[in-house]
Length: 253
Image (cartoon, rainbow, N blue to C red; front, side, top):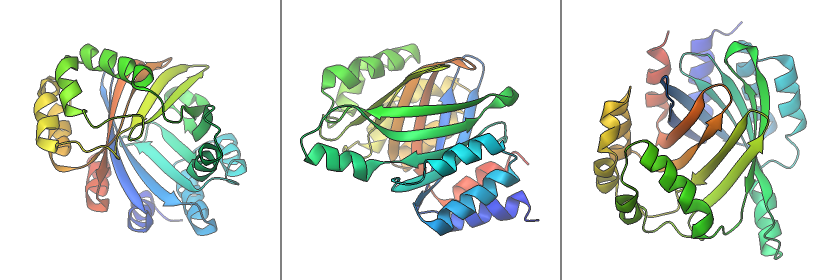
C-alpha cells in the first residue's frame, strides 16, 4: 500500500498544474491544494488511487468516474488537514465548441464531486456564462470584497483588465450551495497592486501567507457565496509549485 506522502509526491510531480486556495469563512481559513491534469487514462488512475488513499466514499469516486467522458481536464483537491477531498472534471473544449458555434447559453464548465467534513457528500455543477457582461460578474465580486473589508472601488483599478473576454464566470446553485467563481488568470493583474489592495486580509487567519502568495504567484480564481456547512465564504486561488503544495500538506501531518 502506498502511503499518503508518496501519493502526494506522485501527484505533485505528475500534475500539469498545481494550485493553492484559501477559503475565508466566519470560523476559519480553510487551506486547500489542487492537482490538475489533462484527462487521460493514466491521470484518472492516479487520481482514483489517491482518492482511495484519502478514503473518499465509493459513491463519490464512482460518480466522478462516470463523468470523465467528454472532460478535457481532471483534478483532485483536498483540505490540507484532510477534512475534505474533492474530485473535479472540466469541459472547456465542449464549452468552447458551443461558443464558436454561436451558442452562449450557460453550460457546466466544471463539476465537483465532494466528500465534505462530517460525512456529507455533494456534487456541484459550475455553470459558465460565456462572455458574461460586467454587470453579471462584478456585483457579486464587489459584494464579497466589501464583506472582507476590501475596497470595491480600488478593486476596479486592480482588476481593470477583467472584461467579458478575460473573465470566465460561473455560478453554482443547488442543494447546500449558492456561489460564483470567476477565473481571472487571463487578465493582466499587477501583483504588487493586488497584494497592496488585499492588505486588510492580514487580519484573517493565514492572512500573511495569502498576501505573500498574491505578491509572488499568479492569481487564478476568486470565488464566493454561501455554503450550507461553512456559511458565507470568499476563496482565493493561486498558482503554486509542486514543492509549495507538498510543504503545505506536510505542515498538517
